Length: 368
Ligand SMILES: Cc1cc2nc3c(=O)[nH]c(=O)nc-3n(C[C@H](O)[C@H](O)[C@H](O)COP(=O)(O)OP(=O)(O)OC[C@H]3O[C@@H](n4cnc5c(N)ncnc54)[C@H](O)[C@@H]3O)c2cc1C
Picture 1 (cartoon, rainbow, N blue to C red):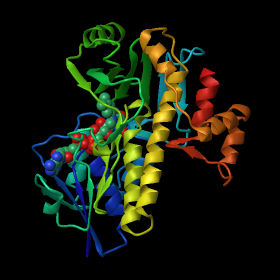
Picture 2 (picture 1 turned 180 degrees about the vertical axis):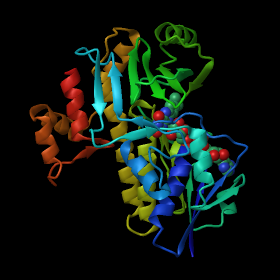
Picture 3 (picture 1 turned 45 degrees about the vertical axis):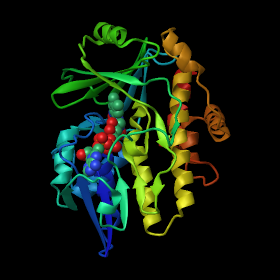
Picture 4 (picture 1 turned 45 degrees about the horizontal axis):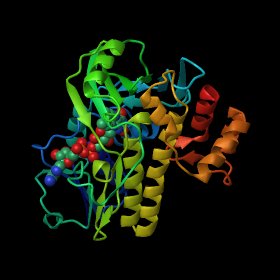
């Protein structure tokens, strides 16, 4: 028998265990277990997904829009408000044939942990040697030190959280530019979650709180600071693969975390099955995360309706990537349907990180 142990029951660990289960479903010589410490609570945020993840969940758990135990609300895309100088608002659609979800992270965790798809062990892991398995995916949360990490460039590093009353017409994530950054508005079954993202080195938390109240009517006492980073060593002793906040973090614009964890786990599973080398895994994960960094910076470069110190800073952040420049050039000169039809062309990369060419085109036509 071969065994994969996933440490952690936050978004990253839950998804990794589900992916492991699904990959090995026709390989009876593999087993998956998830180990977590119930006394160490996972992050409370992370409600928004992208389409592929919901497909995986509906296949593995036979859940759907009418019947799911994690209070999923539909996410048809992202509504950008106040971004760019051209329009007051525009939509980043997933396409009318696709959708994703927002969900209650606590109910999601309870559901996955009690699904019996894999063994669940409640234990605090102090040392990887205490885990008797061939491979480990460590999703035990934020690193205790950032010494061996690369800082990723991003203009926000703090968030105020809050919630308001349910809104019946919110079928996507709202992403509202503000003088200090941007604010997500996520529909829940009975409320709307807000996250007011800002840069604490530009805007004091008191000022952000005041603006959050003025713009959205929300009093927030909950403030989280974060760093944007990726670990420099994400496979340890050829056996332990880091994922989730242990691997990387970038602010939540475009709900990039869960898709990045899924991509990383896919590569780790290929490595465990001998289908990818360690070098390939490193190169592909690092390159994928840099693409997220770059794409988010590109969105900020379009600015917003605000001319403030935050937006001066955000629009000044640069990156270099000839591949991305080429894709922007391609998307600028072609119509949307021409790009869709190109996506079957093997000579043209159809994705940049989690984004297909239509996402790039959509941003160009709404902001440039
Ligand atoms: C404001 C905000 C909004 C966000 N919104 C989104 C979003 O909409 N979509 C999205 O994809 N992402 C979003 N994110 C990112 C999301 O929060 C992260 O993806 C998520 O927190 C990842 O957490 P994790 O699973 O790595 O670790 P955690 O959630 O911290 O979980 C760690 C787990 O490890 C266990 N553990 C820890 N130490 C041990 C140990 N020694 N032994 C055993 N178990 C242990 C804990 O019990 C816990 O189960 C957002 C982030 C922020 C800050």
